[in-house]
Image 1 (spheres, rainbow, N blue to C red):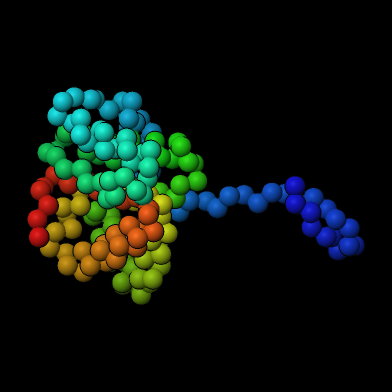
Image 2 (image 1 turned 60 degrees about the vertical axis):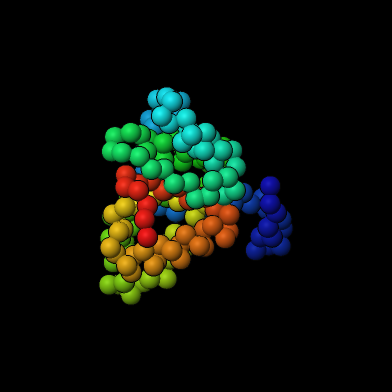
Length: 171
């Protein structure tokens, strides 16, 4: 326990400080989407192996982890599963799951409200950023530029980034 002086000069036991709360997570991680509930098969062995490495060594192994595949093949499930597994190992992980459209909408609101610095801080302070359906940022040049800064900040600080897309990445 911590000791703090009282008004009378005597030491009193202070309550321990609560750990900092993680930032708002937008869409909450779905707890039913775990690595155990993910269907394993030959077609997704590499993705599962990479996801497990990310869980074991966030920020160092496969950073960023890019999950690409067709619609309905489990990218979102694996994204949530990675987030859940990392948070289970370290409950203090500052995590945010966001669909790319939500990221875009938040950025537009920040520009309109003249609060872009708050937007940047919200994302750049994270330990784990999970972005679903990144392909929807295609053609949104200003959002791509802002995402690039977030990307660079997280990667340089060895924070983990996991991205999904159902279209193949290109220039």
